[in-house]
Image (spheres, rainbow, N blue to C red):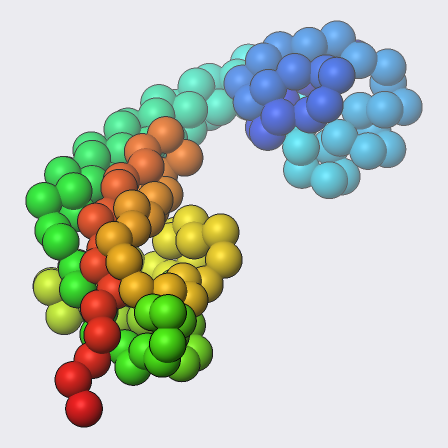
Length: 149
């Protein structure tokens, strides 16, 4: 059976591909799971339109992510925390703290996009990657310093 894939299917193809698969695989799995549609002329035409719109949307999202990445690389965030002996923090600096510091700077970033391997537990300078788009990663310069008092 000839079908058009709506999303990437392992070992079959990616979105927009026209492929030939077994009838049972198409009728029992791909079409009910909305991973594919039958390759009729109407479906091919509507899929082409949807793919054009999604590529335009993707390009727009990537452009906004790149401008946001430019703004993030220009920023230097400073977070003040209480610290004990040998510059060890009482607690840690987490994604949520970095997100709050960016909000104070005027940038709204989802905390799940901040790629901190583990919480920061010592004073110092750090470079924190932030994934704004699957293809765009910004580097934030962060300084954790001792709080007064």
